[in-house]
Image (cartoon, rainbow, N blue to C red; front, side, top):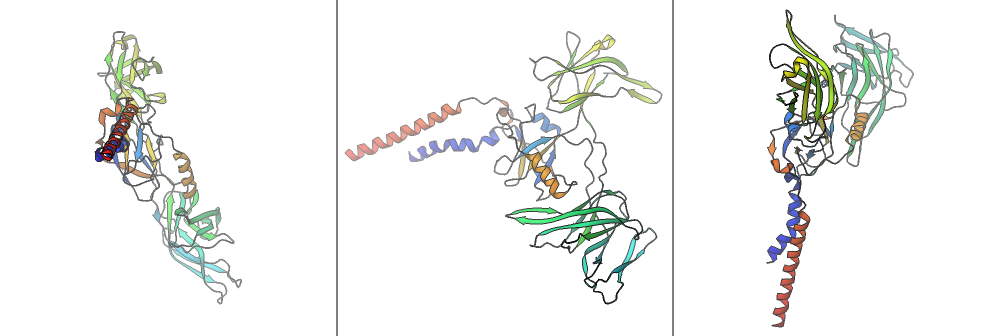
Length: 448
């Protein structure tokens, strides 16, 4: 009886522990690129959009290995593709201090190849007795980098000593005339109470020059450099559009209705005649529920597809003020087009889920729920702070999704019934009755 009583009293805790999996349709295990990214981004795929129920994508949430929700948000993806962020190791040569304690100065003697790349750098003091000590200054050959430079990334030995210093960067085309391209670039490597801030990049903002010279600014501690890497300006390409082709059903009033099976962020529309060439004057409408009023999204506009000697010619897609995530879409037409049932093509660019890797790995993305909603978290504020610390070129690391696995399935899309409170009271009442029964039994034994 005591075991039964313990089970009944502990049952509410068991229910609470199973809420995570019982509230969501399915989840995807996530693989993180790197172990110390801090923040990660995952591009949503069509299956994730089809799993979501909430029009604002509030039912997308990242969980850690314990089933604890981590700070998560959904952000629009840039219209341009991810920039190339690979860095290039470049030759560099340590230089002595520009002025020694005795006042001696030095001159630079260099040897270049036919392409203008440095083969040898020699420094010679103008006074033979002058000490020749490196002082964190360096000459960097970036002539092999084709694109303008976004930044230089420096590496120095790991040390418990904090790093907080500033460097000046100069550029030259001939190793004779120098111009300042960065007056003061801050470099950091600080650790405190388990937290760490690092900044290893000197931001140049698009400098084009074959040679760069680095010097610690006056009064700043020099660094013992180990490696110098060039960060080219990002090369961006237009991110391709994703298109959904929908077949419609003709209605009695002449319109054609379509149903979209996911919460896609639609911002473009196109009409494709069912066969061959065609011309029509179209108006596009949408609504989320069948009982809602239709809202005009675009048009009327003239859409066409024609064939000529040069090939197919078609009207450009229509822009929609959005994104629009409605489930129901409708085309109405004028004139001869009223008898057509064209294919409706809806265009979108995938968004991304961004989350902070708190808690225990591995992480997973859960989607689809009529009961749970993602709590708002200041993820954008954290990202802005990380970008300020790590440089403008920093972006959250990439997370990739594995194969989806079912959780509660369609049961997670049913509204929760308000029976929990009554059941809990029944359980507690039953527990109290058992306790009373045990007490009575003990009293009877004592009297006997």
